[in-house]
Length: 113
Length: 123
Image (tube, chains in turn blue, yellow):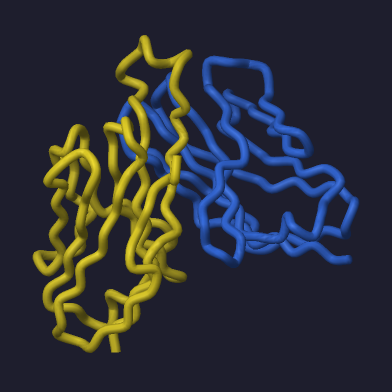
């Protein structure tokens, strides 16, 4: 079964600085998608960014970008110019040929003003 | 589109009572998922449906849990009888397609759209 590991339970960043959240995964599949979801205190799960495994180019969405290392099975999220509104739980997730999405345990990001 | 709609947003019930959680997926999405989120276990998949048919219910904790999807626009998750350890946030999510349908690759967003969740407290 595929597993997703987030080794940083908590992270902290100063407003306007850059922070990187780590994620690794284990799979024997070659075809899959990876995601980062944000869960603010409202508990709504919000899709931040996604990466298709067959694409070598790293995905970017405004201030959010990923560093996808397929051989290393690593998928980190970089948040540039951090804002107070970025404070939330961040979940890394995987979907393969099997239909359901697997989540990591999450990283709680605190943004200091 | 109103997104995935879950009700109620909060539910407090006494141990032993029946609880029914409701979900309306995004129109046109053919996959529906029920997840449970707790501090100890994180996000766990309970069951998912494809075209209203349950595909994998291996995550359902025990026989006290049941889920139905009578039509493409409605699903329920029922707990009977409820226990304090069932206290959690229950999410419903819907999605288009899956990786097995190769020709969907360029068209569809494989991310799941989540509802706002139902916070269940069993006292």
